[in-house]
Image (tube, rainbow, N blue to C red; front, side, top):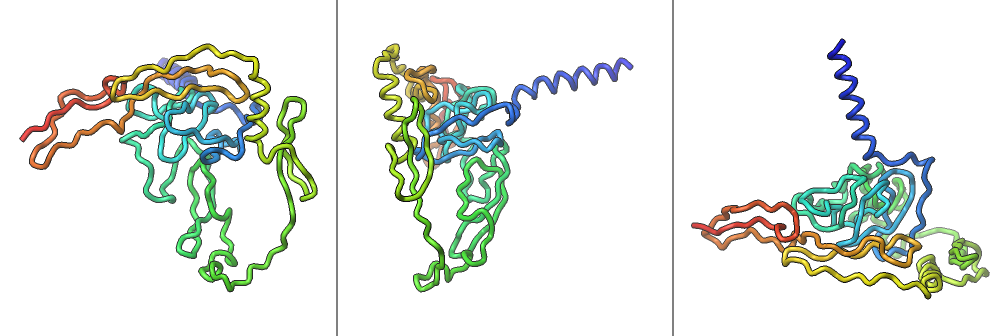
Length: 282
């Protein structure tokens, strides 16, 4: 009986510990607005709720509860603020290259267990390669296999591409201090061509008389760089200032030909100790 009780306590504690890393149920949260077009890729919500946001760039914050700080664009990973590994939600991370977590060499290997499972096809050498993978970037050429498109002849200028052109126009209007974006026929005119243009005008008006606290960019050790300040969508001032984080691209453990590397001290991923200390010996 005692062993059974102990097992129940362990299971309960494990559930409590893991539950904090789960995303909030989709029916209990709303998709946060995002700018369109994005300066980089558009990312799908890792929580699988169908939300979209602009992928974060290098040295920008990421992760957080329900990934509210964003998901990193290709080429970078959401790394611990200090350390050598990936950040785990609800922890906040920073987008950067991690030596032990390189980007895949092939699109079919682009699997991320944090992301929802998605299927689609890529057009490769005139043919369609259809895959299913866990990804936050819906960059498929097609959502499903289309025999009329997935043939090399389709790319021939002489091929008969029969379709019906329907004239539509999209854009945004600034209504009651909010950007309202819609699509309609070509006779419709809009104040702004897209959400980003509308949002920029909105924020100029909203923040015209706002004075943000002066934030100094930190002076970082040679092996690290300052992160970009984080300003939430719709806010005028940063809520998270810049801080130093490791730049692992500065690390070089290579020795000249004929010499071997001897690690004197392992790195811990903190600014000032981002790279292994090593010697080159015969």
